[in-house]
Image (spheres, one colour):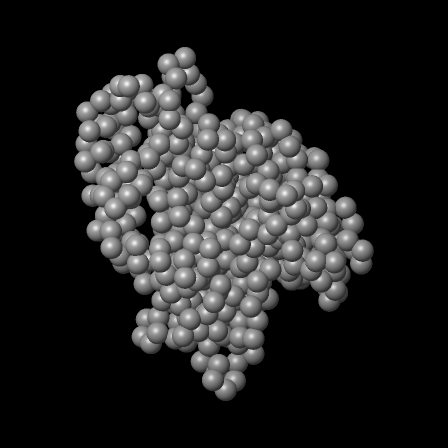
Length: 496
């Protein structure tokens, strides 16, 4: 049997295998495609990103511009400034005025009056909060709904990541606040899907098909990577032989794939990651720790200096950058077509001192507290925190725009992306008050990707629309003929 024939008879997800049995997923190459499908439209991709904060109740802290219409340099809020910095303002639309309904008995696609641990589950699934299973996602999330249509033939149906590895608040695990993904298992039962929070483990899972099931597995993954000087080196011989038989376009894709791998390995090698899974809090490692200790927002005693050190911070900025690179690579190489990326926990207690120089955590900043700062300072701080999330969304948009898909078009043309936030601002049914961050009124979402004719470069108010209706719209744009939970509607103005 000839080598050429074996390409067509093996599974579409190809691997190079080298020393020690190392396997590396290959990008989509024209040589793998049936001749009759050589000009086929590239597969669609879907990415859902989430930030665990409310957008706030002060005008300068809000994410959305004051007026509807086209986005440009003149009306980007401080929170949206990273769009301009990344040069992707015309590739993003912000949808504002969204609302998750509330009631003492959760209404259709709604939540109970208590805010924390009740909004992100509804947003991600379009299904009313399950008061009998407090904190669990009540239905299949948008990533797995997308995967049912988009992921056939890929080695990883959904990349489920989170860059914040610990909840940080002393005395609280925050387990339910760190999950935004749920699927039906082989028995047809709903199961929560905890995210991978170690970039190193995420990398190993992507390129060797190994997903550690527990702490020992995570340690093993770290040791395996330490033994491998480079995945690329270990498969270099097979890669060289394969490249000789590829056309020019495929050779370019292979080279790009190898260059991206080298860059990722360099970044990963520079990181110090905790042993064990990221759900457990490691001991404080001393100066410049890879994971900060727990913090107590009330301060006092051993926690009096909460916001003058690196406690409650684990270099989430670098982690988010590496995971963004992994998502981009997975999409570019057709390893996966769907991702769910939680930048920060819901009710996020990540310390913003090391990251942004702000003497508070993200949750307290959402409440307007930055250690006795003035109103103007607290408003500006909220915008900075939102901008950090937007920066990583914009970076992924930029990378997808600047990368060719299999037909020569930008990857972004075949992708739908969303960035959502935990809360908005408005009436708080539990605590009262009409201008509270404990509210799911006036929520916003950022949308990008040119799949399905999405209307980009705009501020689109959608007063009273459910956030899941935005997800339905993006899912439809990438070819998914399904809706989320109890929400069947879409946002028509989002398709131009």
